[in-house]
Length: 294
Figure 1 (tube, rainbow, N blue to C red):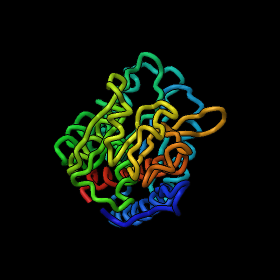
Figure 2: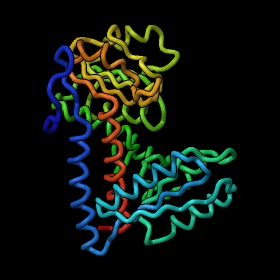
Figure 3: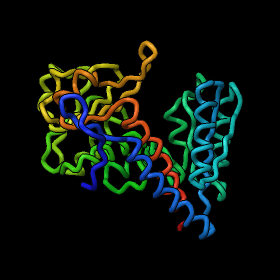
Figure 4: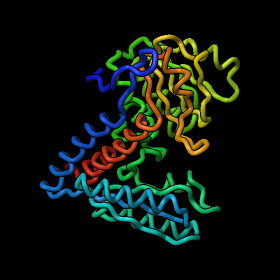
């Protein structure tokens, strides 16, 4: 399943999956493809739409602008003010959908009260949906015909691929059933011929189910949920969670507790997170290819 990108073994021999190295390789591919598109007169152009006054979104936009500029992708930030109406947001998205100069659209979260996320996701043209969250693109994912997908789900798969372990026939357990991580990861694993069990808040004896997994994906949104007693010795453990706890950045997996028994593990930070950012860039050039017909 591709070449392995791992650091030296972690505590007890568990190998850390190096998300930063994987992301750097993806960025190199994206930069080359963005250059090809520009030379073909098909410049990638991503527009990030912000509605509301969330301070973290402003910081995120500036980091994105810098990163995409280095990759050769045009990046525009559209701020609709602190309290736009639903009609104003939808009108702006309609305009961007119809603008041939725009190849990709993303909407920054959180949105102001009264603007439902699902309504906005449905508004983005599927060919310009760089986050892969529109119903049309999720439908293509179900059928295995996707050209983009939810960035974090794709990132989790890249982390798994980096281990070099074939997925066919493996027992995979996904903890979490969100529409942008848990469910799409499960679908992607099924397409790779793994046998998939999805767990959630009503799963009985979660630890017992998790221990059956050759591959465990933690995407529950609960810090430190996965502990040593939930992990099969030698299993691949992919931690999708990211939280701030007492000034530390941690995941859904108790890393220090689990690393001694896992075979491979993603750290937090430095695991799935950097790959997710890289997959957004990859989705952006994929949308440019489709929008430009290049």
